[in-house]
Length: 181
Image 1 (cartoon, one colour):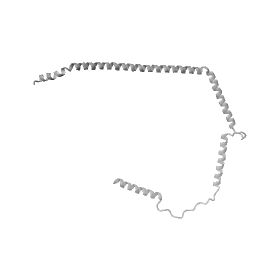
Image 2: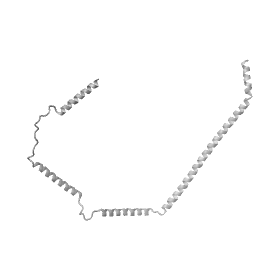
Image 3: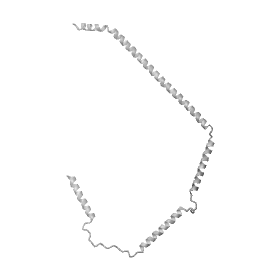
Image 4: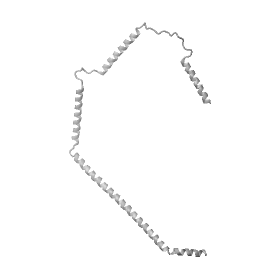
């Protein structure tokens, strides 16, 4: 069978489905268009809902600010800044008076007069200097101070410092030999 006949034979069974396929494509396009319209409508409704929520929030905030302003006005209605200043001065005066009373109560009574701190420090330094001079004079007047005896044993052949230096030198030689290996 030639190729042309074979293609026409294959086309025959599919040709009767063509109108149904076109109809399905048209329906699909229509549904896609409706879906786009519905999506746009939903977006618009959501935007409007958010705008209404914001408007309601703004209305409540404004209403509460009005209530707050009225409450503050009512609270300050009977207040005068001069009266507040006078009251604060009275409080300050009373606190100062209370402090003076507290200071007067806490001072010792009948224990003598108050002394100048600088005068007391100067007198203390004088007394300390006199005591120091007295101690120095006692030390200078002792002429018969027994001195220690000279040791009768001979000193070691090698001082300890020299021995330590030799040990350090030996340790350094050992370290150098170890590092060379």
